[in-house]
Image (tube, rainbow, N blue to C red; front, side, top):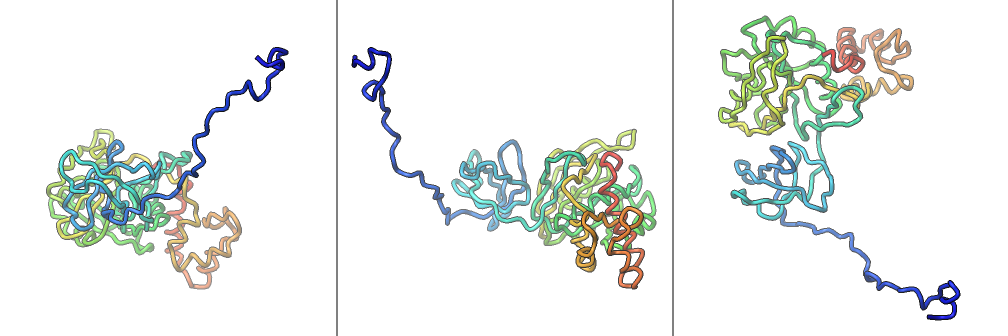
Length: 337
């Protein structure tokens, strides 16, 4: 023992130097995966993704998220690149190594105070809002909220009114005439031919309250879908019959994404400007609105730039009223729909 050590002090001879882990810098380069197979995600279940390859859409490949992906979210409708075993054979597993940029995103939150956004489906061309004309009774509040989500997410909304054999679709459809919203009417005793024509060669997401006949439509559009058909409960709200979003291939081309029946549709992530931006003839005008304008007009927004458009004849009063009713959905609690 050295004198310094004996005196209760230490020098370098008393310190054990551990060998280093190497001086070679850690590479951040990742494999390019030039031979990756492109596919679309058609289902998600507990950390596994079911994918349909672009060149063989009838094949189903089960994949996991590659380690280099980290926690990158992957949802139904995403376009991904796959490596590994992409044959789709039983007991095989591929890896998702890339997710392409999304062209549209349908988001929702549990309620209007929940900061966590849930992506329902990506890259859908259309959002088909399924509403029954009776049993249960239709509610404009839910439709308006879905319209807000569609406009903000880049999807083209379509209103599908079911059970026309039980009630006249005219009055409810008239509520949306000024929005140029496509309306498709179906009956439970007829084939949904008009809806099938709207969906052809498109990726379309169907959304609606439980019990409105959404799963019945899916079974008619895709005969082998085997989606359960719900029975409306005695209190007027249906039981959940679909528990996860799934994309189904349409016989005539395109995909339909059947989403779970929802009881609330939170919009905490959307602002009034996000909605108006979807209206090409109005998006420029609201740039002249004061900061924080909700575009609802007097008395809440006395300086809203949309009102002068009506006065000048550039915008019809009916179209502005319809838009403002949709915007009101942002201020209506989700549980009230």
